[in-house]
Image 1 (cartoon, protein in one colour):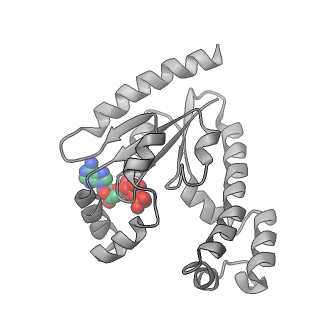
Image 2: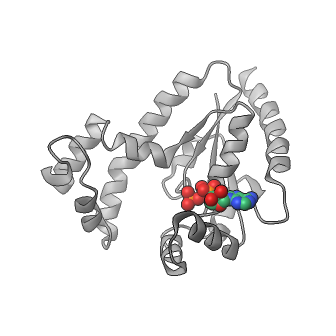
Length: 202
Ligand code: ATP
């Protein structure tokens, strides 16, 4: 199965672009959403979180104690790295299981991940797409969507790789600014991926 990783900075519009691929019948694995699901579903991950961050990482009913975890990892790169080392392999397992389930009848799949390059998960994909937009556009979109301040958006952005660095690692690009149509760009890439996928399958 041909697998394509898709990423972009916060507010670049990667989820919006994925929705266009979905309209074309391409299934999308949303890694960031899935990461939240598996925190309360994946037994191996839950055990790892409890033994690393304490039993009170979860409430008695199995709900994740977000405040507890956030307080530990928020200001510590080391603790955040420990959490990522637990979560990323669990997301890889979930992606594998998902891809196995959907692999029949679809030419290729997409894996949407904000940290596609940072988490090394692009290595599980055959190719990658980077969605870009001007900084000001990204900031304005997130302010409107999440009702947050410019400073809060910039703080979130500072935790991600820059577009410039991501561009060095990506193979395909979608420009999601005010001037370019994402539909046209998705259709053109879709055609290209169908050809690549058919070569892999034959
Ligand atoms: P995040 O990493 O924060 O999840 P994202 O890259 O997935 O962000 P989206 O959620 O797709 O970005 O888009 C951010 C916001 O900008 C959304 O409210 C979306 O509707 C809007 N948006 C995205 N692309 C466009 C566009 N081309 N025109 C207008 N609005 C857009």
